[in-house]
Amino acid sequence: MSNDIKIYLGDCKNVLKTIDSNSVDLIITSPPYADQRKNTYGGISPYKYVEWFLPISKELLRVLKPTGTFVLNIKEKVVEGERSTYVMELILEMRKQGWLWTEEFIWHKKNCYPGKWSNRFRDAWERLLQFNKEKHFNMYQDAVKIPIGDWANGRLKNLSDTDKIRDNAKNGSGFGKNISNWVGKKTVYPTNVVHLSTECNNKKHSAAFPNALPEWFIKLFTQENDVVLDPFMGSGTTNIVAQKMGRNSIGIEILPEYYQMVENIINNKEPNLLNKNKETENEHIKHKRHYAICQ
Ligand SMILES: C[S@@+](CC[C@H](N)C(=O)[O-])C[C@H]1O[C@@H](n2cnc3c(N)ncnc32)[C@H](O)[C@@H]1O
Image (tube, protein in one colour):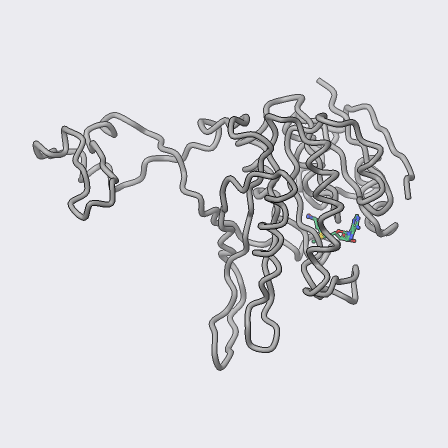
């Protein structure tokens, strides 16, 4: 099977205009966070962030299929002792633009390094905001099931009478459960907290996704041959993972050095740092390639 990777050099605000409407199944991306990494690829003032992002999200809304999903990795920084509010403002403005804010996943960064601040603890999580165009979107929950865990061995052995019926919570929360439903089950759905370590050390990009991050969302929201878009491509993690999973993908990157690096990886001119197994890498580079310079 062959899958396309199309990569573009340019500002995604402009490049997105060249992509067909309703053509993308999943957008997953991590844009520059406000004022961070100014020295590597620029930063946007927290006060200008919403204004900067809205023309981009408008195009993302246009290119996404009605059944598609947009996952936005973002985290507000601390300015003068307070968390910025631009992410919240962005969510409100994107809702006005027509997006549904469907869910918020938390990326728990398992390996964040220790730190000491007088008035806060180390930052160990980031937001993964899920937006959709429609209430009914494609979601393949079974693809991300996890083992039920050891709790089932003890808890499910001796079921009480209330375990065998739907037991409504005593606190009136409206939640209820029938524990016996889990008997014989080996796997369950995961939570909305994604526990993953960062992996920047082996990539030539200061803010690369761990492979498992796009992989998890690609499994959850797409099927083989679907189209995945990362408008802030960086080192191309999303695209390379998508290709390994049999999905087509589009990547857009404003900095020529990152664009070139990804082009070299997919042309096999540069070792794929995302892929330690060279044989597997070659196996997967059986795809039609489209490159375009579009600024
Ligand atoms: C946080 S990094 C993304 C890293 C990526 N997820 C990875 O795994 O390597 C953001 C990237 O967006 C690029 N970028 C910034 N502004 C852009 C724009 N307007 N259009 C396209 N790319 C942009 C930066 O150069 C940077 O490489």
